[in-house]
Amino acid sequence: MNGRPFRFTGLNIYNANSLWTCSYPLGDGSGLDASLTAIGPGQSVFRSFFFQWMATAKGQRDWSAFDHTLAVAHAHGEYVIATLTNQWAACEEPMPGYKTEAWYQSGYRTWLDTTVPSSYRDWVREVVTRYRSDPTIMAWQLVNETEAGSRPGGPCSATASASLKAFAGDMSQLIKSLDPNHLVSLGTMGSGQCGTAGASYQDVHSVAGIDLCEWHDYGAATNTIPGDRWNGMQVRIDQCRALNKPMFVGETGIQAGAVGGYARRAQLFADKFTVQFGAGIVGELVWDWQDGSHGGSTLNDYNVGPGDPLLRLFSSYPRS
Image 1 (cartoon, rainbow, N blue to C red):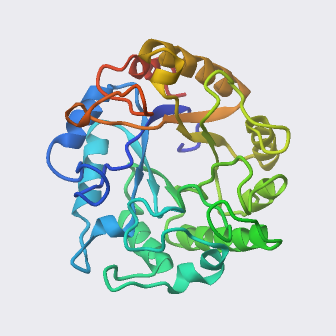
Image 2 (tube, rainbow, N blue to C red; image 1 turned 45 degrees about the vertical axis):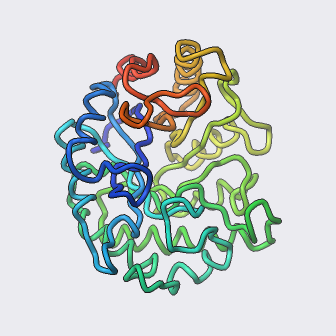
């Protein structure tokens, strides 16, 4: 950041911009401020959904939630990774539920609905133009968990990687032409999805306008460097190092009830953070925050709430 190495920890607060558009609302009032206070000063970055649906009211653009989120984050001295659309249906109504390869080939330029005023590409132009001078933005992320499949869980075509690379090139070039100051992330799970499996992950991330690599870490609570020899975390670290691009863990989740409780979960996260930072990861963002009035930490899900022992970890890994 600003020409210096930067290491960060924090949470996903995916609904920071919600006005009942994505889970409970934090996009106005005191809820987000109270949440950041409860999380504590160790958090330096949080990741949130900045979807078009969340900035639209009755078919018209409404920036109030985004303005609020960035102002509150700035007041707490925190940065935000702004994710601009979802691969999936969640929080994207009424957009297409699953973005197929056809969407990455052309649909992102053309798909419109009467309840949202812009195509995805035009939406990105709008939001980046509005916030390009905001120092609270750490990075623009094109998609949450992008994959260029035929359907959820369906086969990957031979052209998936080329389609995703062309999309990444077009969209990152658009953002950089408007905002040369902020970083750009494609947004990937990283574990072998359509378009980024194997060597294709490195090829897609070789696009000049993509600055960051990303991995999502689930289902391997006791494995500090998870994954296989084709699509595992170490493979991705090596690929991104070859590109001279840093890699962060955009989501990492452990269900406390599956590992013996909250204290044990915090220790497992500590083990992961220590090893992964040592291996070259530059950021760790836990999935996900849930405030106390909506249940806080829960044993049977990934939720992290006030007083959770893992929150103390963030101060153990200061920004560098």
